[in-house]
Length: 503
Image (tube, rainbow, N blue to C red; front, top):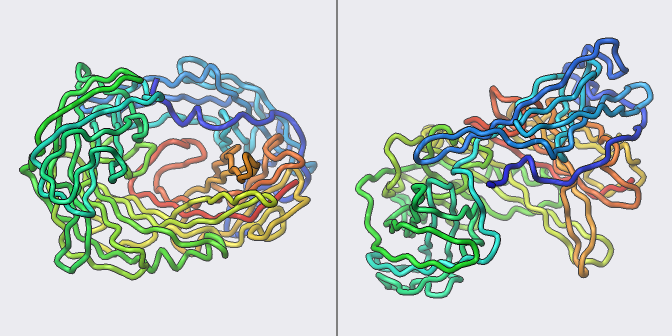
């Protein structure tokens, strides 16, 4: 079965107590509304419920099926604001995608679904998602594909190949490390070989289900203002049915789509880069890019951002952070004319973490914006939401390395200086070592509409070292604390990386 985000992450503990302290509603920013109901156990008990429909968006139509929650850990926690103690109310999940926790007191809860916590006063949760591509099985074993083709435009340095299959939502990139990759000036190749299992979302293709294997020549071009970019140029399409672990071959001719288009942006790269120190004072700027494509309208609600093929335009011209006005960038379009054109702008940042003398691990985050492509062309492309301000672990600044924070620590922050956050997501990572290298493992995520969270029992363990990523989200009309996997356009997010902390 095709995986869903429900299955990601490790299960964490179910019982324990925390220290007394500020309630979540009493966050750093005084403008945040406080809950009217105390976290102390109330007389009114209610039932927490949820559903988990997964909609697969395919070329032949959408299919909705429940995600099986029967093996998922489901627990609702309340927190006593006087004692700091968490109380666990066990629940259950079912094969029909439903979850239920009976007899939960009123007030804010931490609903644990798998390794994820939803921090909300709600009692009804939509755990459904939308995913591009049909349900099916991934290639987990090496599954080689050999391609022979003619009809390329004379290959040039900077071109690359974009592999995609619309019906299963499979995609990947071939940049030149593959055997048989075309050489400069080539208009054909005879034995391009790549491992399909290394692609992104490598759902095994089956032509009897309507799957079509496509390979696009993404051609390096220059805009009227002299900005280099890559765009959809020619496409090879062929039938391909795969068996996991077995080789398969396809052949065909690259042809140029009849439909064409243009895309222009005023890209304020400096506005993204100006936020680097807010991500973390020691963060390093890495990349900045814009991708433009087209999707069935329903994919605007999908879990994944606008990051997969078939790309129509890819813009990452240099390593500079200066502003760019591109002028019209031309592309050829093999996709249905009715599809929604969408765009993503992202700026990447990294920070390293190390335990003792172990080789550091590099954590990568970004500040990104997803919108309809027309919005990118009609106004400057700049951040819609900035990083949170003044992050704290308990009452101490979170950018420094901290010890003695307790296993019942809290994280809190102030609002971003740019935009209005609709939700926040806190990812907690545990650091360990393996073969002389530092390793970061995500242990939980917490979704909230407030500016603080307490870490439930079992998240932090004595003797371990952690760091947190705090994401600010802008997604109008959507509540990630009750519908964690729902997406909408426009949407944007920005991340903060804390220092290391240990109980």
